Image (cartoon, rainbow, N blue to C red; front, side, top):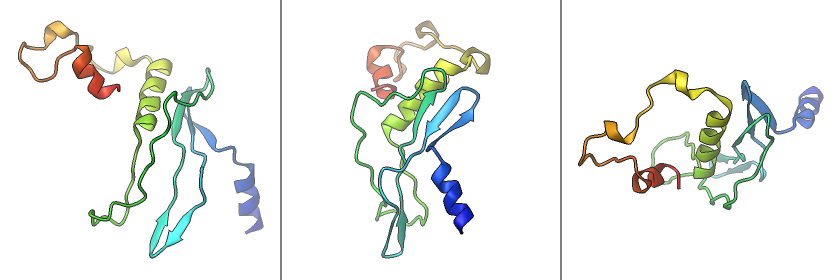
Length: 126
């Protein structure tokens, strides 16, 4: 057990997940265990290795630990901050043009519910 505790003590709370993409997985609060509920939260902030970690300009929202209405025994909640940091880090560190087709506004038919304008894009990037 001492070797495990020593290994945990050496962890920095951030690791490279993919070339140039790091994740800060540090825990802000202690692990919770009550009424058969094991819960913990991690920061989950992605950042480019070359630029270093920068906290988001907006505060991290309060996240639930369990949805009592869902019967699932394992639940995972992801904040907008985590998803935004993942998207911006991937765009900053990877050549995304080799993964698919770029779409511009002229390729989307008129009247389609998703248009490439600031109204629709705002749904994905608040």
